[in-house]
Length: 169
Image (cartoon, rainbow, N blue to C red; front, side):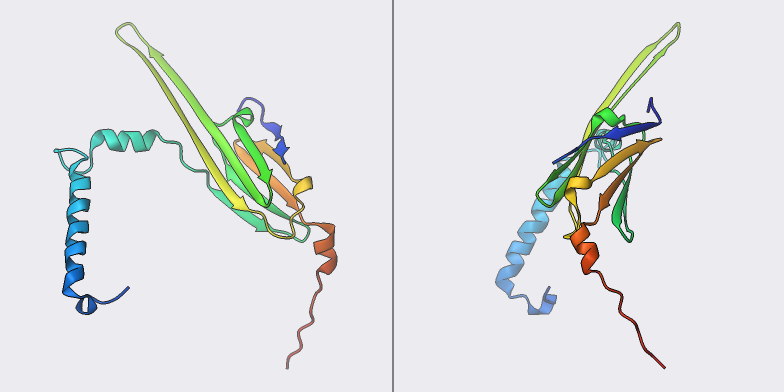
C-alpha cells in the first residue's frame, strides 16, 4: 500500500444394507459421472498442471476475525497488496459486504529476456450484521494491508444489557 493509513467509505444418511436395489443404479450412475468429470481434466491424470496454476493465481478470500467488545464489534481482514481504493465495504439492510480486487504486475528485463506478468482477481465476503449493530455508524480503516471495521452497538441495545449476579456455594 502506498499510504500506510487510509480510510474506506462505508455505503449504506442410511447404511448400505438399508438401500433398496433400485437405488444402487442411481449411485452407480453418479459414480460414473464423477469419474467422467475427473477424466475431463486431462489425460495426464490428476492434478492437471494448468488447473493448479489457475487456482494458484486466484486471489484468496481474505482471512477475517470478528471480536465483540462492550460497545462494538470489530472485524479485521487481511488484505495484503490490495490498495484501499480497490476495496469496497457496503451495508445493505442487515448485510455487510466486503468486495475487493487485487491487481499485480511485474516485469523483468535483461539482455536475453523480457517477462511481463499481470494478475488480476476479485473477492467478495458477505455477512449478516448482529441485530444490535448500529449500521449508520460503521467505520473502516486500512493500515499496512489490514482492514479494521468497527461496528458500534446501538444505544438501545446497550441500554437493554444487564449483568446478572451468580450465587453459589
